[in-house]
Structures are given as C-alpha cells and as structure tokens.
Length: 618
Image (cartoon, rainbow, N blue to C red; front, side):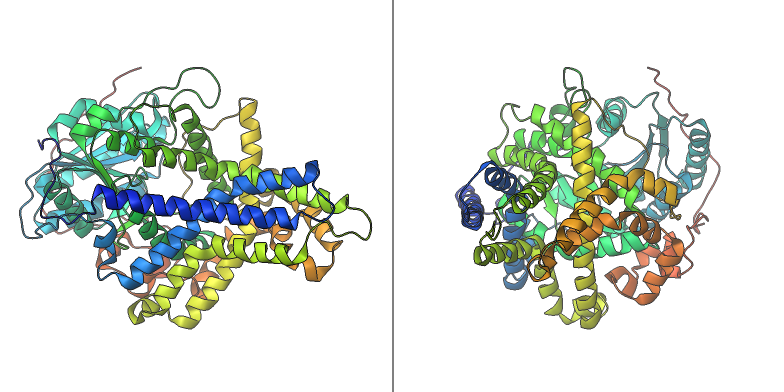
C-alpha cells in the first residue's frame, strides 16, 4: 500500500501563496461583479421609489447572482488558459507525468455500481473495458466488482447470469466479483463503503463507475499511473463527456454541455487547485485515505434533509482534502464517457435527486477542519438550486411591479435595464461562448465539431434551447423544494436510459405546472410593448410548450432527424474513437436501436465459477 502523501519536488506546482492570491483575486472579481449588477438593479428599480415589491425583486435577483457570476469568471479564466498556456491541462492540473511504459505496481478495483439497471448495457460496457485492458497487457493489475443494490428479482437474476458470463470469459485474465446487498442503505456511498469494508484492503485504488460509464483503456491506465507517481493525490476526476446518442433531447443538451464544460472546468481548476470536484463516477480514488477519512455520517433527525446523504461525491471530496490529500480534475476531453437522460422527464427526475442531496449540505457546513474552498463549494452547491425559486420569485415580483405601477409611469428605468439584461445574458452563456471561440480558432477542433457553419448554427439553436429549458427546470426545482417543506422526498432509483416516445398523458401529468406558468407568462408578455419584452419570450414559450417539447424530443424518429441534420455534432461522431466501436453505438450506426449483442473477443474463455453472490442480510 502507498503511504502518506509526500511532496514531489520535481512537480512545479503553484505555491500556497500563489494559490491564495488566485483565490483572493477570483473572490474579488466575483464580489465586484455581484455588487455592480446589484447596483444596476437598484438603479433600474428607481422610478417610483422603492416599495416592498422592489425589495423583493432585488432580494431574489441577488440570490440568483452567485452561480451566474462564478460561471462567467470561470469562463474568462478558462478562455485565457486555453489560448495562452502551452499546455492548458498541466497549467491547471500540475501533476507529475507518469511513464507510459512502466509496468503497473498497484492493484486497482473497478467498481460498477448498479441498482435495477439494464443488465445488457452494463455487461456490454464492462466487456469492452475488460477486453481493452487485457489487450493492453495490464489486465492482471485490475479486478472487477459488480456492486448491486437491485431489489427487482427479475433484474437480479439477470445480473447473476451476466456476472457468471463475465467471470467465465475473463477468469484467466482478470477476476470478476458480483455482490448484491439487501436494501440500499447509504445509497451509492453505502454501496461503495460495503466494498471498502469487504475488499478495500486488497487494493490501492478504486475506479468508480456508474451503470452508463465507459472509459477507454488508455484513460484508465493514465489515471492509475498518475495516482502511482503522485502519492499526494487522493481523488482524480476525469472530464466526463456524453456518448453519441440517438435521443434528440440528449443530443442538443450534451452539445451545449460539451461547449460549456471545457472553459468552465479549466477556469475553476485554476483557482480551486487541489480542492477540486468529485462527481461520483468516472474517477479514481486512493483507497486507504478514502476508507479512513471519507465515511459519510447519517444525518440525524427526521424529514427529507435527514438520513443518508444523496449527493455523496462533493462531501467525500471535502473530507479527502481535509485529510491532506489533493482532489483534482483532469480536464482532458475524450476517453471518459457517460449517457445523458434521453428525455425531459428523466432529466428532471435526476435533477431533483441532486437538488435534495445538495440541500442536505446545509447540515454539513459545520463539519470541523474543512478547507475554506471546500466549505465554499458546499455553499455554492446549495445556492445552485436555491437560485431556481429565487428566479421564479424575481419574475413574479417584477411582473407584479409592472402591473401595479401608476398609470403613465414606467416601473423600470430603460437604459440600466437593458444594460443589466445584456450583462446577465453574456454572463449566463459565457462558458459556451468562450469554448466556441477557442474551437473556431483551431482548425482541428473546427473539423471535429463539423465545421464553422455547423458550430455557429448549432450554438445559436442550443442557446435558444437552453433559454427555453431553463424556466421549465426552475419551476420543477421550486415545486420540489416546496414539497420538501412538507416531507416530500426522492429515493435512489434506476435512471431511465432507454429511448422511447413519452405518452402525452404522462407528460401532461408531470408538466402541467410548467404549462400553467407558460400561459400566465405569455399572457403578461403579450400585454406589454413587444419592443420592450421580446427578450422574455423564451421564458414564456419554454414552459408553455413543455409538454409537446418533451414528447417530440423523446421520439426515436425525431432523434434520427436530429442525427440526419448533422447539427449539434460532437467529435466522437466526426472521428469515432476505436475505443467506442465495441459498444456498437446506435447514434454512430444510424439505426436508432439500442445495442443488444454482447461483443465476443478473441481471447481464452475457459469456464470457471464466479465468486458466489454475497447476501449480507439486513
């Protein structure tokens, strides 16, 4: 086992003083921006004096600002790093470079954490990853653990059969262990904790996967080698990108994510440094400190914010950093993939689980010994979702202010109002615009994303798509948080990944509040002078069209049309990596069908029994 972290003098890392100044500068830029935007809002509300509604508008607006401002400055810094640094990745993630020819000296467990998932999909991904690792010549340095929390008997039977097939096929090259727990205590964090208690001492590192995760062998080996030569590194997170998808909804969404994530991640890594993020999957952990320091408490009391922690990842990152180990993100695109929700209802369901989990951080802010940056990250994770009801409150208060204004008296000052609108719009979309600027400046990236015309048209339509989706999500968050007050909560269920057209009745039952909001917002907008309120049209039309929007973009036929349009293209479509070909991706084949066949590899497959599934009981 590797010991306590030691500083490697060969690595040129920013000194603690430099990192402190970076964080002070970033905080100063953010605070100055918040102050400036709030001042603009005060000036905009000046006509007619300041009443309760004016104060409500200002208060709600202030709550929405932190994430907007932070995203903007992350994008600005990220763009500067992309354009000015010789090696942008090393500039923000200064780790010792591993020797790619050196044999692996440590044991790594690959953890596939599942709960009532599509077993064929999980087996396909694991087969492909195992085969690639075996072909690399390093298969014996890894062990596969399929960690199930499933409670559906039909699915668990499929899981056991799948695990047996994997064990029989790969026993001569890599051990495969299947374990199913009774219950779902601690959710995913509890699932991994159970692995740590049983087998953690046998391994140095753990590579954590979700059911939809896929990493290339090169990426896995690179992660392990970085951990071996950087003993201070506790968690190394990859930059996870979406797989090519046959879903129209996911296709546009992940194109926008791909645009925004690079500048945002580079910028945030510049000032976060060794207090980086952990997203719970597609990341590698140093097991000894993780087992010793990252066990999560069960939150005392009753209600939806008590009990097991849903959003475990960022808490584990803060605990790892408190123990003296670095947590970093490796901002390299490619080689680390996931699947995005195929339709709007699944996207909302996933977000609500994150919402409840992030709000639990209120109970964890007082943990002793956390780094200041780590504590700030928990606060920001809370504000990410509190911004949704604040935004709804801002829109309603502003509309009421307009309706109750004295006749012939404008409720808002036009010049500062337009300046404020342009500033906010620029800040909101800055991460995407910054990455687009870098893509257009590089011939290789222009080609990878389909050429400049496709990039520009795709970006413009994705921005409109995002503007219409944002109020739909804000309403969902706000209603859910209102339900938390009365004890409503979500559990940890399987994510829906199959592409199928949503029934209109189901979409209507789930999205009627958005539709009602859209009707009221559109009625208010239509009563105002169009030249003054046209920028607000997506805010009304997005919720108004939420039901047909959800149904249409869930359709496989619309997905095929989106692929055929060649817009919203990602580099894996332009030049499919060899690592993806075993997955038989439907978006690349153009069939629109979910792959069902299991790849057969030209390697020995002598029968051998899998380790017996373990049922630890309650």
